[in-house]
Image 1 (tube, rainbow, N blue to C red):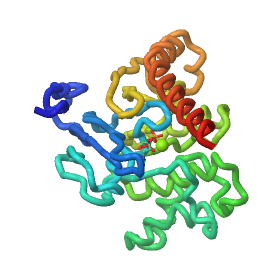
Image 2: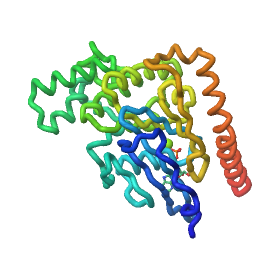
Image 3: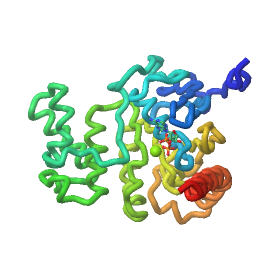
Length: 287
Ligand SMILES: Nc1ncnc2c1ncn2[C@@H]1O[C@H](COP(=O)(O)OP(=O)(O)O)[C@@H](O)[C@H]1O
Ligand SMILES: [Mg+2]
């Protein structure tokens, strides 16, 4: 019997019999020069309709690997990913991905970026312009419709990327550290925008992050991952009232959640740190 077969299947997380996204027993190995590397080990989680779930873990714990598998960009893995009961094979219209790297088209204005998926979907011109304007407004870029990405801040470009992804009307918005390159204040304020989107669209969202405050600020549940191999260490329900804003960051309850998650994450981050220091020391010794 394999190790993963010995582990019990976790119960449905929120008592919802039919979650939108189900990740079941996901395992991914990479073949590297040093041999096989177990990046993700038997990860199971589900996301209910309208729920905001964050996946948090130290660098190298397999978050982006999971993101790529759920988004259909990696197809060689064990386990199963389903959206509304259908297996995900290859890039999937029902999952909209927002990447850590900026991905706006530099030659298109904000409005032209957001309108792009509607154009390719064959939506009529006036309808798609109306829809794109609504989305631009939703992400707080009203007045910047005709700016090019180079004329805006990093945070504004990421909001453009989010609006463009939302134009597909994905069942699940999947984001991999979309705000990692931004300063803390911008990140908190962008969090407010993300919360407004959730409230306006009831958007089901899976956010990948290594930022604890961001995870607590935004989420209904936080999935803490262990350092390599990436496993689900703990799932924490965030029972803070909604609608939320970044003001909540100052509350004692918020601090309690952050401390709690840090206690879990600290151990994992320390493993990652000592491993990378050992690699650094070995490299130093060899050359
Ligand atoms: N294509 C790949 N080939 C080999 N190893 C990979 C590949 N992609 C990721 N890895 C390894 O898998 C582990 C998890 O990576 P990743 O999912 O990017 O982690 P995270 O996003 O949590 O920082 C890391 O050790 C990384 O080096
Ligand atoms: Mg990553």
